[in-house]
Length: 384
Image (cartoon, rainbow, N blue to C red):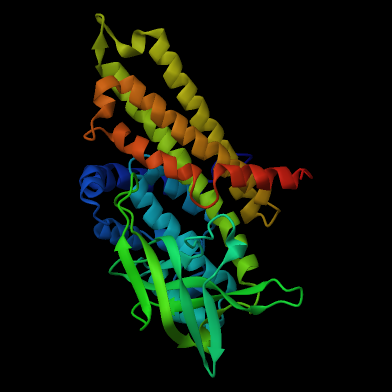
Protein backbone atom coordinates (compact mmCIF):
# COMPACT_ATOMS: atom_id res chain seq x y z
CA UNK A 1 0.00 0.00 0.00
CA UNK A 2 1.34 3.44 -0.91
CA UNK A 3 -0.12 6.26 1.14
CA UNK A 4 -3.89 5.93 0.98
CA UNK A 5 -3.83 3.89 -2.20
CA UNK A 6 -4.69 0.22 -2.50
CA UNK A 7 -2.28 -2.66 -3.00
CA UNK A 8 -2.70 -4.75 -6.12
CA UNK A 9 -4.22 -7.49 -3.96
CA UNK A 10 -6.79 -5.10 -2.52
CA UNK A 11 -7.56 -3.69 -5.98
CA UNK A 12 -8.26 -7.19 -7.26
CA UNK A 13 -10.44 -7.90 -4.24
CA UNK A 14 -12.40 -4.69 -4.77
CA UNK A 15 -13.02 -5.54 -8.41
CA UNK A 16 -14.21 -9.05 -7.58
CA UNK A 17 -16.54 -7.90 -4.80
CA UNK A 18 -17.88 -5.00 -6.86
CA UNK A 19 -18.88 -7.46 -9.59
CA UNK A 20 -20.49 -9.73 -7.01
CA UNK A 21 -22.40 -6.79 -5.53
CA UNK A 22 -23.62 -5.68 -8.96
CA UNK A 23 -24.66 -9.08 -10.28
CA UNK A 24 -25.80 -10.99 -7.19
CA UNK A 25 -26.55 -8.58 -4.36
CA UNK A 26 -28.22 -5.67 -6.15
CA UNK A 27 -30.90 -7.74 -7.97
CA UNK A 28 -32.30 -9.16 -4.70
CA UNK A 29 -31.61 -6.35 -2.24
CA UNK A 30 -34.98 -4.60 -2.51
CA UNK A 31 -36.95 -7.85 -2.31
CA UNK A 32 -35.05 -9.02 0.77
CA UNK A 33 -35.46 -5.61 2.38
CA UNK A 34 -39.21 -5.43 1.92
CA UNK A 35 -39.71 -9.04 3.00
CA UNK A 36 -37.31 -8.64 5.97
CA UNK A 37 -35.66 -11.81 4.63
CA UNK A 38 -32.16 -12.64 5.81
CA UNK A 39 -29.91 -13.18 2.73
CA UNK A 40 -28.83 -16.76 3.37
CA UNK A 41 -27.84 -17.35 -0.27
CA UNK A 42 -25.66 -14.25 -0.32
CA UNK A 43 -24.03 -15.19 2.98
CA UNK A 44 -23.21 -18.59 1.53
CA UNK A 45 -21.76 -16.96 -1.58
CA UNK A 46 -19.67 -14.58 0.49
CA UNK A 47 -18.44 -17.56 2.47
CA UNK A 48 -17.38 -19.39 -0.71
CA UNK A 49 -15.60 -16.23 -1.84
CA UNK A 50 -13.61 -16.26 1.39
CA UNK A 51 -14.97 -12.92 2.62
CA UNK A 52 -15.89 -14.23 6.08
CA UNK A 53 -12.36 -15.52 6.52
CA UNK A 54 -10.50 -12.51 5.15
CA UNK A 55 -8.75 -11.27 8.32
CA UNK A 56 -8.14 -14.66 9.94
CA UNK A 57 -5.21 -17.06 9.78
CA UNK A 58 -5.09 -20.04 7.49
CA UNK A 59 -4.72 -22.30 10.55
CA UNK A 60 -8.42 -21.75 11.33
CA UNK A 61 -9.65 -21.73 7.73
CA UNK A 62 -9.14 -18.03 7.08
CA UNK A 63 -7.58 -16.27 4.13
CA UNK A 64 -4.58 -14.86 5.98
CA UNK A 65 -5.52 -11.31 5.02
CA UNK A 66 -6.31 -8.31 7.17
CA UNK A 67 -9.10 -6.02 8.27
CA UNK A 68 -8.26 -3.55 5.50
CA UNK A 69 -9.27 -6.15 2.93
CA UNK A 70 -12.51 -6.81 4.80
CA UNK A 71 -13.30 -3.10 4.74
CA UNK A 72 -12.65 -2.92 1.00
CA UNK A 73 -15.21 -5.68 0.53
CA UNK A 74 -17.71 -4.09 2.90
CA UNK A 75 -17.65 -0.76 1.11
CA UNK A 76 -18.40 -2.35 -2.25
CA UNK A 77 -21.30 -4.43 -0.90
CA UNK A 78 -22.76 -1.48 1.02
CA UNK A 79 -22.83 0.56 -2.20
CA UNK A 80 -25.84 -1.55 -3.16
CA UNK A 81 -27.15 -3.10 0.08
CA UNK A 82 -26.40 -2.31 3.72
CA UNK A 83 -28.20 -5.37 5.10
CA UNK A 84 -25.89 -7.77 3.28
CA UNK A 85 -22.87 -5.70 4.25
CA UNK A 86 -23.89 -5.76 7.91
CA UNK A 87 -24.40 -9.53 7.82
CA UNK A 88 -20.74 -9.75 6.81
CA UNK A 89 -19.42 -6.95 9.01
CA UNK A 90 -21.05 -8.19 12.21
CA UNK A 91 -20.30 -11.81 11.39
CA UNK A 92 -16.60 -11.07 11.19
CA UNK A 93 -15.78 -8.08 13.39
CA UNK A 94 -18.30 -8.76 16.16
CA UNK A 95 -18.89 -12.49 15.85
CA UNK A 96 -15.64 -14.21 14.95
CA UNK A 97 -13.11 -11.57 15.95
CA UNK A 98 -13.51 -11.99 19.75
CA UNK A 99 -12.85 -15.72 19.41
CA UNK A 100 -9.79 -15.10 17.28
CA UNK A 101 -8.37 -12.42 19.56
CA UNK A 102 -9.10 -13.94 22.97
CA UNK A 103 -10.02 -17.60 22.50
CA UNK A 104 -7.96 -20.58 23.56
CA UNK A 105 -6.52 -22.89 20.94
CA UNK A 106 -9.40 -25.29 21.60
CA UNK A 107 -12.05 -22.56 21.27
CA UNK A 108 -10.54 -21.22 18.06
CA UNK A 109 -10.34 -24.70 16.55
CA UNK A 110 -13.91 -25.53 17.57
CA UNK A 111 -15.63 -22.43 16.26
CA UNK A 112 -13.59 -20.44 13.78
CA UNK A 113 -13.40 -22.79 10.75
CA UNK A 114 -17.18 -22.77 10.24
CA UNK A 115 -17.35 -19.01 10.89
CA UNK A 116 -14.56 -18.32 8.39
CA UNK A 117 -16.36 -20.41 5.78
CA UNK A 118 -19.62 -18.49 6.22
CA UNK A 119 -21.31 -21.77 7.14
CA UNK A 120 -22.08 -20.46 10.62
CA UNK A 121 -22.48 -17.07 12.27
CA UNK A 122 -21.64 -15.75 15.71
CA UNK A 123 -23.02 -12.71 17.52
CA UNK A 124 -21.74 -10.14 19.99
CA UNK A 125 -23.96 -9.77 23.10
CA UNK A 126 -23.02 -6.49 24.76
CA UNK A 127 -25.97 -4.07 24.64
CA UNK A 128 -28.74 -4.44 27.22
CA UNK A 129 -32.14 -2.77 27.72
CA UNK A 130 -30.58 -0.39 30.27
CA UNK A 131 -26.92 -0.61 29.29
CA UNK A 132 -26.25 0.57 25.77
CA UNK A 133 -23.61 3.27 25.57
CA UNK A 134 -22.95 2.73 29.28
CA UNK A 135 -21.66 -0.80 28.84
CA UNK A 136 -20.22 -0.75 32.35
CA UNK A 137 -23.78 -0.85 33.67
CA UNK A 138 -24.21 -4.46 32.51
CA UNK A 139 -26.84 -6.31 34.55
CA UNK A 140 -26.57 -9.78 33.04
CA UNK A 141 -24.94 -12.00 35.64
CA UNK A 142 -23.02 -15.27 35.50
CA UNK A 143 -22.36 -17.31 38.63
CA UNK A 144 -19.85 -20.16 38.68
CA UNK A 145 -21.59 -23.27 40.00
CA UNK A 146 -19.11 -26.12 40.08
CA UNK A 147 -17.84 -26.52 36.54
CA UNK A 148 -20.62 -24.46 34.93
CA UNK A 149 -21.55 -20.82 34.51
CA UNK A 150 -25.19 -20.02 35.27
CA UNK A 151 -26.28 -16.96 33.28
CA UNK A 152 -29.31 -14.74 33.92
CA UNK A 153 -30.16 -11.49 32.14
CA UNK A 154 -31.08 -9.96 28.81
CA UNK A 155 -29.40 -8.41 25.76
CA UNK A 156 -30.84 -6.04 23.15
CA UNK A 157 -30.30 -5.22 19.46
CA UNK A 158 -27.99 -8.17 18.79
CA UNK A 159 -27.10 -8.63 15.11
CA UNK A 160 -26.90 -12.13 13.56
CA UNK A 161 -28.21 -13.64 16.80
CA UNK A 162 -31.25 -15.53 15.53
CA UNK A 163 -30.48 -16.88 12.08
CA UNK A 164 -30.77 -20.54 11.20
CA UNK A 165 -26.97 -20.70 11.00
CA UNK A 166 -26.14 -18.78 14.20
CA UNK A 167 -23.96 -21.11 16.27
CA UNK A 168 -23.10 -18.97 19.29
CA UNK A 169 -23.34 -15.63 21.04
CA UNK A 170 -20.48 -14.24 23.12
CA UNK A 171 -22.02 -12.28 25.99
CA UNK A 172 -20.71 -9.92 28.62
CA UNK A 173 -21.83 -10.70 32.17
CA UNK A 174 -21.02 -9.60 35.70
CA UNK A 175 -19.07 -12.47 37.27
CA UNK A 176 -18.15 -10.88 40.59
CA UNK A 177 -16.93 -7.70 42.24
CA UNK A 178 -13.56 -6.06 41.85
CA UNK A 179 -11.41 -4.89 44.74
CA UNK A 180 -12.52 -1.30 44.11
CA UNK A 181 -16.19 -2.28 44.40
CA UNK A 182 -16.95 -2.05 40.70
CA UNK A 183 -18.46 -5.02 38.87
CA UNK A 184 -16.17 -7.64 37.43
CA UNK A 185 -17.27 -8.19 33.81
CA UNK A 186 -16.28 -11.26 31.83
CA UNK A 187 -17.18 -12.69 28.43
CA UNK A 188 -18.72 -16.12 28.00
CA UNK A 189 -19.55 -18.13 24.88
CA UNK A 190 -23.15 -19.39 24.79
CA UNK A 191 -23.91 -21.87 21.99
CA UNK A 192 -27.26 -21.55 20.22
CA UNK A 193 -29.88 -23.93 21.54
CA UNK A 194 -28.50 -24.02 25.08
CA UNK A 195 -31.37 -24.55 27.56
CA UNK A 196 -32.27 -21.29 29.27
CA UNK A 197 -31.08 -19.22 26.29
CA UNK A 198 -33.98 -17.74 24.33
CA UNK A 199 -33.81 -15.67 21.15
CA UNK A 200 -36.62 -13.12 21.31
CA UNK A 201 -38.81 -12.29 18.26
CA UNK A 202 -37.12 -10.12 15.60
CA UNK A 203 -37.45 -6.36 15.83
CA UNK A 204 -39.51 -4.39 13.32
CA UNK A 205 -36.92 -1.90 12.13
CA UNK A 206 -36.80 1.28 10.07
CA UNK A 207 -33.76 0.11 8.11
CA UNK A 208 -31.36 -2.82 7.75
CA UNK A 209 -34.58 -4.82 7.34
CA UNK A 210 -32.88 -7.86 5.82
CA UNK A 211 -30.37 -7.94 8.65
CA UNK A 212 -31.09 -10.27 11.58
CA UNK A 213 -31.58 -8.45 14.92
CA UNK A 214 -33.04 -9.81 18.15
CA UNK A 215 -33.16 -9.39 21.88
CA UNK A 216 -31.80 -12.30 23.92
CA UNK A 217 -32.94 -13.71 27.25
CA UNK A 218 -31.00 -15.88 29.70
CA UNK A 219 -32.81 -17.70 32.50
CA UNK A 220 -30.66 -20.14 34.42
CA UNK A 221 -28.67 -20.78 31.28
CA UNK A 222 -25.80 -23.19 32.00
CA UNK A 223 -22.62 -23.47 29.95
CA UNK A 224 -19.29 -25.14 30.77
CA UNK A 225 -16.77 -23.14 32.79
CA UNK A 226 -14.43 -23.57 29.84
CA UNK A 227 -16.67 -21.29 27.77
CA UNK A 228 -15.12 -18.28 29.47
CA UNK A 229 -13.54 -16.24 26.68
CA UNK A 230 -10.25 -14.66 27.60
CA UNK A 231 -9.29 -13.67 31.12
CA UNK A 232 -11.95 -13.47 33.82
CA UNK A 233 -12.71 -9.85 34.67
CA UNK A 234 -11.28 -8.55 31.39
CA UNK A 235 -14.50 -8.88 29.41
CA UNK A 236 -15.31 -5.20 29.10
CA UNK A 237 -11.76 -4.30 28.09
CA UNK A 238 -11.76 -7.09 25.51
CA UNK A 239 -15.03 -6.00 23.96
CA UNK A 240 -14.01 -2.35 23.87
CA UNK A 241 -10.95 -3.46 21.90
CA UNK A 242 -13.18 -5.38 19.51
CA UNK A 243 -15.45 -2.34 19.16
CA UNK A 244 -12.52 -0.18 18.06
CA UNK A 245 -11.86 -2.60 15.20
CA UNK A 246 -15.51 -3.05 14.32
CA UNK A 247 -15.97 0.74 14.12
CA UNK A 248 -13.49 0.79 11.25
CA UNK A 249 -15.53 -1.90 9.50
CA UNK A 250 -18.77 -0.03 10.06
CA UNK A 251 -17.11 3.14 8.75
CA UNK A 252 -16.49 1.27 5.50
CA UNK A 253 -20.18 0.31 5.41
CA UNK A 254 -21.17 3.95 5.90
CA UNK A 255 -18.78 5.02 3.18
CA UNK A 256 -20.29 2.46 0.82
CA UNK A 257 -23.79 3.76 1.46
CA UNK A 258 -22.63 7.34 0.91
CA UNK A 259 -20.99 6.35 -2.38
CA UNK A 260 -24.03 4.35 -3.41
CA UNK A 261 -26.11 7.50 -3.07
CA UNK A 262 -23.70 9.28 -5.42
CA UNK A 263 -23.88 6.41 -7.91
CA UNK A 264 -27.67 6.51 -7.99
CA UNK A 265 -27.84 10.29 -8.29
CA UNK A 266 -25.30 10.49 -11.12
CA UNK A 267 -27.28 7.93 -13.10
CA UNK A 268 -30.64 9.58 -12.40
CA UNK A 269 -29.40 13.10 -13.08
CA UNK A 270 -28.20 12.06 -16.51
CA UNK A 271 -31.47 10.32 -17.40
CA UNK A 272 -34.09 12.60 -15.85
CA UNK A 273 -35.15 15.62 -17.93
CA UNK A 274 -36.55 18.76 -16.29
CA UNK A 275 -37.27 22.08 -18.01
CA UNK A 276 -36.00 20.65 -21.27
CA UNK A 277 -32.58 19.61 -19.96
CA UNK A 278 -31.15 16.67 -18.02
CA UNK A 279 -31.05 17.29 -14.29
CA UNK A 280 -27.26 17.06 -14.51
CA UNK A 281 -27.25 20.28 -16.56
CA UNK A 282 -28.82 22.21 -13.67
CA UNK A 283 -26.05 23.62 -11.52
CA UNK A 284 -28.02 23.31 -8.28
CA UNK A 285 -28.35 19.55 -8.80
CA UNK A 286 -24.79 19.08 -10.05
CA UNK A 287 -23.36 20.98 -7.08
CA UNK A 288 -25.45 18.95 -4.64
CA UNK A 289 -24.08 15.72 -6.11
CA UNK A 290 -20.55 17.17 -6.05
CA UNK A 291 -20.92 17.80 -2.33
CA UNK A 292 -22.10 14.23 -1.88
CA UNK A 293 -19.01 12.93 -3.68
CA UNK A 294 -16.77 15.06 -1.46
CA UNK A 295 -18.37 13.56 1.66
CA UNK A 296 -17.95 9.99 0.41
CA UNK A 297 -14.32 10.64 -0.56
CA UNK A 298 -13.53 12.16 2.85
CA UNK A 299 -15.17 9.22 4.63
CA UNK A 300 -13.10 6.78 2.57
CA UNK A 301 -9.86 8.54 3.45
CA UNK A 302 -10.86 8.41 7.12
CA UNK A 303 -11.39 4.65 7.19
CA UNK A 304 -8.32 4.05 5.02
CA UNK A 305 -6.27 5.91 7.63
CA UNK A 306 -7.77 4.03 10.58
CA UNK A 307 -7.49 0.63 8.88
CA UNK A 308 -3.91 1.28 7.76
CA UNK A 309 -2.89 2.10 11.33
CA UNK A 310 -4.72 -0.96 12.66
CA UNK A 311 -3.01 -3.44 10.35
CA UNK A 312 0.36 -1.77 10.97
CA UNK A 313 -0.04 -2.34 14.70
CA UNK A 314 -0.15 1.37 15.48
CA UNK A 315 -2.63 3.10 17.84
CA UNK A 316 -5.86 3.64 15.92
CA UNK A 317 -8.72 4.17 18.40
CA UNK A 318 -8.96 7.91 17.76
CA UNK A 319 -8.82 7.43 14.00
CA UNK A 320 -11.47 4.70 14.24
CA UNK A 321 -13.79 7.09 16.09
CA UNK A 322 -13.13 9.80 13.49
CA UNK A 323 -13.86 7.37 10.65
CA UNK A 324 -17.07 6.14 12.28
CA UNK A 325 -18.26 9.71 12.92
CA UNK A 326 -17.37 11.09 9.48
CA UNK A 327 -18.72 8.12 7.52
CA UNK A 328 -22.01 7.84 9.38
CA UNK A 329 -22.74 11.53 8.97
CA UNK A 330 -21.72 11.36 5.30
CA UNK A 331 -24.12 8.46 4.81
CA UNK A 332 -27.00 10.27 6.48
CA UNK A 333 -26.36 13.56 4.65
CA UNK A 334 -25.96 11.83 1.29
CA UNK A 335 -29.10 9.76 1.78
CA UNK A 336 -31.07 12.91 2.52
CA UNK A 337 -29.63 14.73 -0.48
CA UNK A 338 -30.15 11.74 -2.78
CA UNK A 339 -33.81 11.62 -1.82
CA UNK A 340 -34.06 15.32 -2.66
CA UNK A 341 -32.40 14.82 -6.06
CA UNK A 342 -34.90 12.07 -6.89
CA UNK A 343 -37.82 14.23 -5.76
CA UNK A 344 -41.09 12.33 -5.51
CA UNK A 345 -39.47 9.16 -6.80
CA UNK A 346 -37.08 9.28 -3.84
CA UNK A 347 -40.10 8.86 -1.55
CA UNK A 348 -41.04 5.56 -3.17
CA UNK A 349 -39.71 2.37 -1.61
CA UNK A 350 -39.09 0.95 -5.08
CA UNK A 351 -36.03 3.22 -5.44
CA UNK A 352 -32.66 2.35 -3.96
CA UNK A 353 -32.26 5.82 -2.46
CA UNK A 354 -35.39 5.35 -0.34
CA UNK A 355 -33.84 2.17 1.06
CA UNK A 356 -30.53 3.99 1.59
CA UNK A 357 -32.38 6.72 3.48
CA UNK A 358 -33.93 4.17 5.84
CA UNK A 359 -30.64 2.33 6.27
CA UNK A 360 -28.49 5.38 6.97
CA UNK A 361 -29.76 6.52 10.36
CA UNK A 362 -28.64 3.51 12.36
CA UNK A 363 -25.05 4.23 11.32
CA UNK A 364 -25.13 7.27 13.62
CA UNK A 365 -26.30 5.06 16.49
CA UNK A 366 -24.90 1.52 16.31
CA UNK A 367 -21.50 0.54 17.76
CA UNK A 368 -21.25 3.87 19.55
CA UNK A 369 -23.43 6.86 18.77
CA UNK A 370 -22.01 9.97 17.15
CA UNK A 371 -21.93 11.51 20.61
CA UNK A 372 -19.79 8.60 21.86
CA UNK A 373 -17.39 9.04 18.94
CA UNK A 374 -17.01 12.72 19.80
CA UNK A 375 -16.39 11.76 23.41
CA UNK A 376 -13.67 9.28 22.37
CA UNK A 377 -12.02 11.84 20.10
CA UNK A 378 -12.13 14.52 22.79
CA UNK A 379 -10.55 12.20 25.34
CA UNK A 380 -7.71 11.37 22.95
CA UNK A 381 -7.14 15.10 22.60
CA UNK A 382 -6.84 15.43 26.37
CA UNK A 383 -10.20 17.12 26.77
CA UNK A 384 -12.63 16.17 29.56
